[in-house]
Amino acid sequence: MKKLKVGLTGGIGSGKSLVCSMLEKMGFAVFNSDKTAKKLIHESTELKNKIIELIGPLAYDEFGKYNTSYVSQIVFENSHKLAALNELIHPFVRREFDVFVENTDARIVFNEAAILYETGAYKYFDQMVLVTAPLETRIKRCMLRDNLTKEAIERKIQNQWSDEKKCSFLPYEIKNDGISPLLIQIEELVSFLQSKKYTLETRQDIELLVETFYSKVMKDDVLMPFFKHLDLSVHLPIMVDFWCFVLIGTTGYTTNVIEKHLNMPLQKLHFDHWMNLFNETLDDLFEGENVELAKQRASIIAWTTKSKMNLN
Image (cartoon, rainbow, N blue to C red; front, side, top):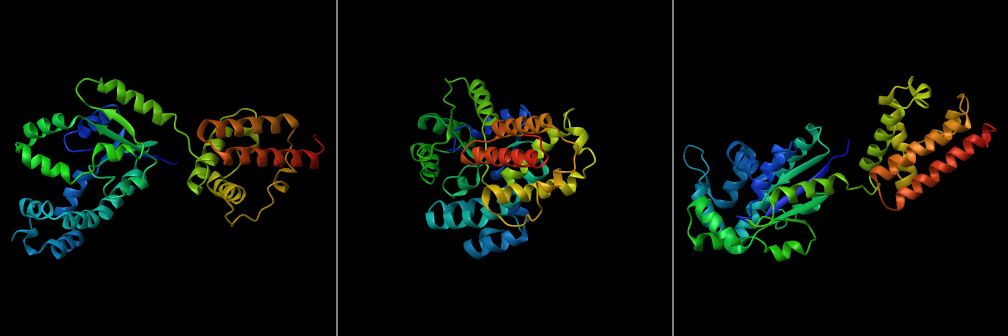
């Protein structure tokens, strides 16, 4: 099943973690990139060696513990070092996120991270969500939470993109200003994401189409008798290959899809029902030019097969 990957970010003190905790309590799958990064920094020997190579031997103490204050002092005074450190850590975190996505049954998966725009990681997500708050509100929150001075927090903020720059990428915005009702905004976000459609332009999209369609077929009283004997573990990849060939031009499908149906005791009503179910699946999940192309090709296949069976 294709998962909708949602990046959720926000500047320091914006309250993105609060939003994510509410999503988790609502039952949604949430991956925390920043917590994962801290875990990897302490546990991954490969990453440790790369950090020492970049920062120097004092990045870890004699017991192998990460020297947070030392590294922070270096990178927050040197933007190039900070960018290089993020570039080291990001691929390790991304691999962990990919495993998280693979292992969850959820259709929507959130990834909470502070600098998804700054690192270019936003490109890997199907949708971006930006949590915003007034600058003074963010500073006050951080002073209370982290026991830092206003100047120290402002230096951290300077190393992140402004909300205005992030908004130029047109993310879905949640305002955590202490005035706008937060729960209502999160419910609206969930509703928006649940209604979001795919473009039917990748093999993953086509796998979703085929798997969803056949799950409907196997529950359908009219069509199920014709398909119940199929080994779907074999049949579905063949159908994915076929629709990939039709819609995105990939090679790999060599079977004649029409010939396979000629000896089946099908009637016109079965083809009509098949078309309605197929088009319904397309409309429920997808949008864009390939949706109409898929409908056209399916209609041609049905018409041609009926003609060969003298059913038109």
